[in-house]
Image (cartoon, rainbow, N blue to C red):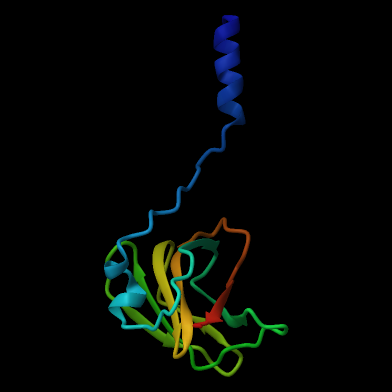
Length: 140
């Protein structure tokens, strides 16, 4: 092998086997939180997480002590436009969608008077975190 060929082979070995690129943020009017008519005083950042399952806990952000938020509405759909799945967080602020498999999902977490969590979650057995921690902030 030539020195150039050795260099190229070495560079290929340093590259990750599979790099997942998060999907782009869709137009606001087509986002799940908007379709479900959630409140947003100030539009939060579009986010992306990688988890082993589609679920987690919803907490209040922007406070000294992040409280768990029961009775938050959670919406999910297979990316980019699957049917809407719905859930409500339990007394401990937890939710989960057990009927989902690996893949990318759009997620919206809504609560009256709070800005929504909005973004995508890639569900993969190789993800480091099992479940997510989703922070919503008061809409002021």
